[in-house]
Length: 131
Length: 120
Image (cartoon, rainbow over all chains, first blue to last red; front, top):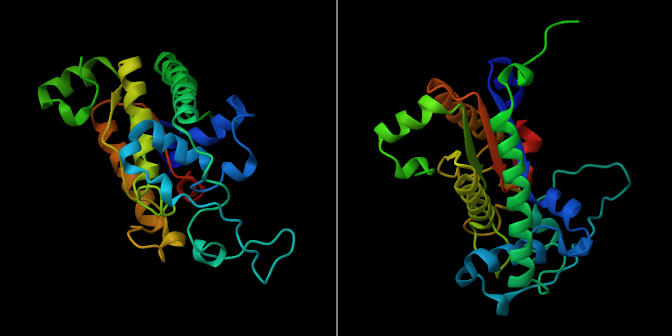
C-alpha cells in the first residue's frame, strides 16, 4: 500500500509505538510483559484511560504450545489456539507510572519523526529513477 | 489553532491544506486484549499518540481508523475484523483523499501489529 502510494508521489511512513519502546526503554518491561495485552499495553491503557481497565481481572498466561511445533514453521493459528484469556504473557505488573513513561517517551520520538517529515523535501522521498 | 480534522470546518481545512503538505493518520483495531482491557486498546492508544503529536507539531491529525486485520482474535467476543484486502484498500483511499487536497507526506501511527505485515 505505502509502496504503491510512493509510486504515485505520496510518501507514507508507518510508526509503531512498541518497537520504539523496546529500543528507547529496554529495561522497563521483560519480554513476557511486551506481548499481546501484556503489561506494556495495559500500562498504556492505565495511563491514558484507566476507567476502562479492570485490573482485578488481570491475567498472566503462558501461551500453550501447539501440537505441531518445529523451528522455522508458521501455522495459521488463532489466539484461542494458544490462550484461554486472550493474554499472551504477563499483564498483572502493569502500572500508571510505567504507562506515563512509555507515552511521554513515544510521543517525543513521534514528534521528532513528524518534524523531520515536515521539513523533508518531497523530491528526496519519492521513488528514484532507474540507475 | 485546531489540529484535529474532525473539529475543523471545511474553510479551516482549506486554510490548513493551502499551507501544509503533511498529515497524521492513526490506525488501530477493535479486538480483544484479555478480560481486563477494553476492546479498543489498539486504536485508543494510536489515537492518543497521534493527537498529542499533532498538538505538539501543529500537523493535522485525521480521525482514527478503528477496525483492522484481527480475524485471529475472532473467537473472543466483540473483535471486529476486516480482511487485509479491504483494510489496505480503505487506508489507501483515505490517503488518496488527502492527496486530492495537496498532501504529499502522511505519518501513519499504527496501534496494531498484524495490519502492516499485510499492508506495507
